Image 1 (tube, rainbow, N blue to C red):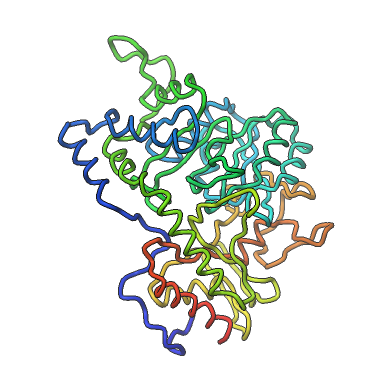
Image 2 (image 1 turned 90 degrees about the vertical axis):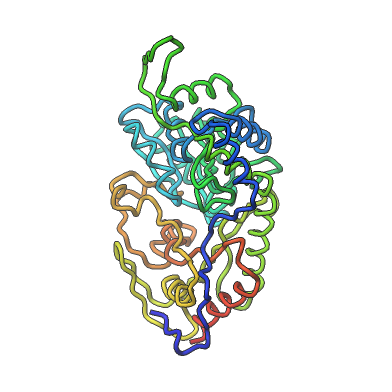
Amino acid sequence: MFDNSRHDFKPFDKKVWLSSPTMHGEEIRYVQEAYDTNWMSTVGENINEVERLIAEKVGVGYAVGLSSGTAALHMAVKLAGIQSGQKVFCSDMTFSATVNPVVYEKGVPVFIDTEYGTWNMDPAALEKAFELHPDVKVVVVAHLYGTPGKIDEIRAVCQRHDAIIIEDAAESLGATYKGRQTGSFGDFNAISFNGNKIITGSCGGMLLTDDIEVANKVRKWSTQSRENAPWYQHEEIGYNYRMSNVIAGVIRGQIPHLDDHIAQKTAIYYRYKEGLKGLPVSMNPFDDVNSVPNHWLSCLIIDKDAMCPQVRGETDPLYIKEHGKSCPTEILDAIASINAEGRPIWKPMHMQPVFRMNPFVTRDGDGRGKTNAYISGGTKGRDGRPLDVGMDIFSRGLCLPSDNKMTPEEQDRIIEVIWACFNK
């Protein structure tokens, strides 16, 4: 554990969160409106308006309000026609919600390794995956921590192999690639309004599409697939996935503040970048020529030669303190000691016990059967880089407190604590 007694770091009286909801007042007005008009279920003006506003913002024809981003991804997987036993290429470094809907439909996720430039799916590994599994026709791509992936390269690979894209933009609402909003690049696209996202309804998500028939199909599926008949007629399986008009009221009040939230998150990112200069660390990267992230979470990665020894088991980490060096576990302990919340980088899906037997593809080939050696660097490929990039980033990276209500003074104290980890 980090020994805060050796330093003069007073804990915050009020916890500094990783990323918590930021309310503005308009939200309760729209919720009250739903209450006063008795539109408390899954129809109402709030839903209609939120769907219109988000479709307009992202630049798609239609948005369908659903109960969660996971529900939106599930609908996307169904739309893609995944059948039992079919392989689906998926981002490896992501939250499990990106992948679980594939399994709901009895598909088999095949995990594609990450690249260092954006921490997203590696197009070279995706191309290799098609060589190994040429029958795959669906690719699920996530944008990690609000940073767009290498969209053009990924789309070019998919086009060569006649594969469709499901775009998981749950973390990247408002981020752009070549001036175009994420959530508009896939054949089927999903966003999230979960409680910690850039704007929130406490829950909720959306399926985004340019096809009205797709939008109508999802509206039907998400309301238990009721047919147009005077009684309850069902000719296919449905789901209780439609967004509530009450939740939509919260989101409706949040939408006008999306750009402000992005500006606040961006300022946090660059304050960390400036404040950590001189340490052997770097911030989560992005393509500054083609993309503008929403900077939902600010993350850092420690230089390989500045890592103190660290080992992670399934649930517990261990590390050995070493002067001039640190590791994610030590820094997270230090941040927690002053009543602030950080988090490890998403543990790659191929390292998760539930998916450990699934295929995993690196740019140098099929990584199936790799062990969970959570040691920085790992096995090297032909170019001297780690074969397993996602494992390397997980080993050396962490998410910093990124709440847009955090004051500059609070962030300065967090930065001082990080410096202390290397200067102990």
